[in-house]
Length: 495
Image (tube, rainbow, N blue to C red; front, side, top):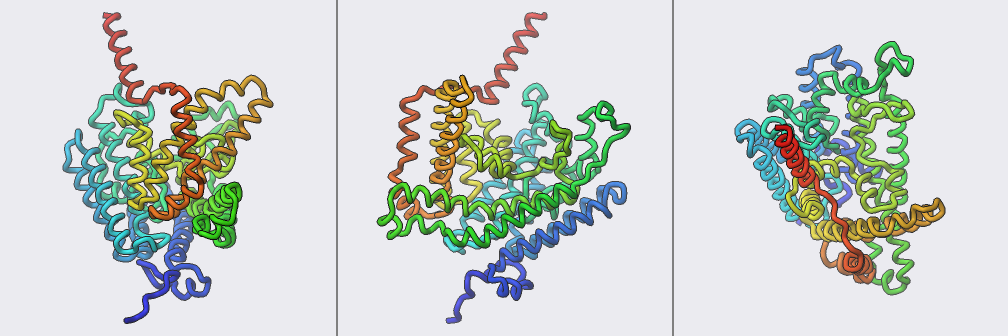
C-alpha cells in the first residue's frame, strides 16, 4: 500500500506552489492561502486605480470581482469549492422564488443546514487531522452573507418601518438583487478566502462609487476649513495593517510553534506542575495561538481597504477611519476588562452577524441562542460546544458581577484602577479557560483539561449566579414592543 503524503503538504487545491511549500517547510494549504491573499492585495490596488467607478461601470466592477473570487476559491480548494458555488446558487433560487414573508427562514435553514452537512463530511474525511485552511472557511463566510442579505431583504420589503430597530431600518434592502450583484456580494475576490462578512448596502455603495461619499457627507467640512469634500486614501492604513500582518506572521512562525496547546493535557505536565503553573502556561499558550488570527484577519482587512472598501467616516480627532470591515481590535482585546468587551473586539464581523440575525431577533433567551448558533456555525466538533456552553455561563456570571459590584468602585480613581486590574486579570484567565476546548476539539482531551483545572471557572460561575441577584435587561424585541405600545397609546390620546 502506497504511503500517504505527509500532512504538511496536503491540500485540496492547486499543487503549483508545492516546491515553495517544501522549501519553507510550511503546509501547502497555508502557502496557497497566503499566496491568494497577497495576489488579492495587488489586484485590489489595481482594482481601485484602474477600475474605479470613474473608469469602469458597476457591471464591469461586479464581473471582475466575481471572476477573480471564483478563481481564488478554485485555486485554494479545488473541486471542494463546488460546495460554495452550489450553496450560492441554491440560495439565489430561494432569494427569487420564496415569498418575502419566508425568504429569511428558508435562506437561513438551507445555508446553515448545508454548512452543517459540510462540517459533518469534513469530520468523516479528515477526522481530527483537519487542514488549517480548507473550504469550510469560505463556506462559513458565504453562509453569513446569505443569511444577512435574506434578513435585510425581508426587513426592507416584508416588514413595516415602525417594527424595525434603527440599525435594521438603516440596513434594510428594498429590492431583490440581480444575479450578478448577488454573486459579486458573495464571491468577490476581496473576501472569498478570509472574509469578512459585510452588509449588502455597504458593498453595493462601494461598487457604485457611493461608499466613501456617503460617509463624508456625515461631516460638516466647511466648518473644518474645506471648500470641497476631501479624497481619503487608504494607502497609509493599508501599510500600517501590513506591518501588523508581518509582525503577526513572525510571531506565528516562532511563538506559536514554541508553545503547543496539546502540552496542557500532557500527563507529565499535569502531574508534575502546580495548579498556578498550569494556569500560567494556559495563558501563555492562548496568547501564542492568537497571531495566526491576527495575521489572517488583518491581511483580509488590508485587502478590502486597498480596493477602497471599508471607509468608516472620521473619528473625533478628524482622522479618516478605515475600520468598517475590521475583524478585531488588538489593543481592546489585550486590555479587555470584561468578557463582553473581549468578545465584542474579537471576530467583530461575526459578532455583528450573530447580533443581527439571532440576538436582536430571538423571542427568548437571546444570549443562549446566540452562543448555540455560533457553535453550530463553527462546526460539529465537541470542543466547540464545550467552549460556547461555557461561554454562556461565563457571560451571565460576568454580567451579574458587573451589575452588582462595579458601582462600588466608581467613587474614586484608585478604586476604579484596582477594579480594572482585577477584572482584566480574571477576564484574560476566563477567556483562556473557555477557549481551550475550541482548540482541543475532542471530548476526551477537553474533559482531561477541565479536570486538571478542577472545573474552577464552572464552579465559580455557578456560585456567582446562585448568590448574586440577576438584574433584568430589556431585549431589543421587548423594547420594540414597548415602543409600539407607547406609540399606540399616544395616538389614541391624540384622537
